[in-house]
Length: 144
Image (cartoon, rainbow, N blue to C red):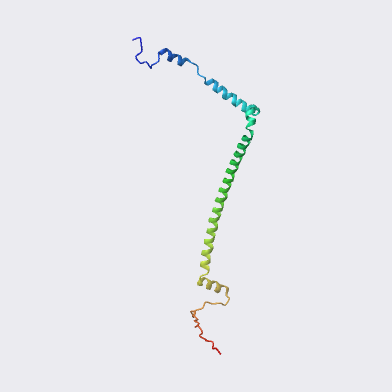
């Protein structure tokens, strides 16, 4: 039983060697720290690649400013639309109230009461109105 039966299985010593190998993650975190330090100190601005890409950086900054301004403009428009909708509802309510008041005040009995209070001498007619019918005149022109 000195030989392993499974040929794909690695010997125990190789597994132990893999476990003991140091990992390279500290280098990645060190690179990240250097990148953050260069951004904070501003030294990344003097690098040649940054200077080459400066127009593109300005373009992206312009787009970001436009995006923010568009958001503020949209919020302002939404507030304006809501304010106008509230004003329309209020004006519609005033219209309905005024129309109802006009309908009530324009009734014949209400007008008669107002005229009686004012003592203008105008009274409601008790005689019903008569219909006037005009017959079409049939006059023919004589030719001479």
